[in-house]
Image (cartoon, rainbow, N blue to C red; front, side, top):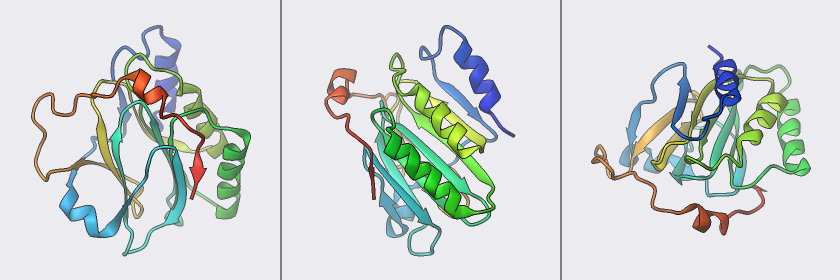
Length: 195
């Protein structure tokens, strides 16, 4: 099920950014950090990477996702993925990296996911459409806005995303409320680095 058309309808409305938008083919499930630790690496802010599933590195974690935007392009056929955690608009070089990654896949079956941002900050919305258009993919999940910080794990075998329980327990009410201000985040914005 492609949720991109539903997203476009929401985007055409006036209130986008005032409440959480969660569009997905299924509910996200939880995973404990201790289960992921030995088979994962963390994707930092303003970083991007391409990788393929392996038993040694199955998960990529994204901790403290608030005003930034995490996007994934996953090829179901080859279990190769491109993951991006952006803080500022994509440049032409960044877009060329995406195009090159997709061309190398040959015949592909791509899934796209976009997660992040906080209420009232819509500065990165256009990047979702840019990447979706470049990838010509099925959009599996769009999870935007709200006022909670997200901690995620991307599974390089299935392309699915899990909510991480950092302390191996469910969060208490208000525990995930974002404490970073938009002004503080704006000072941290930088160009995307491919690693």
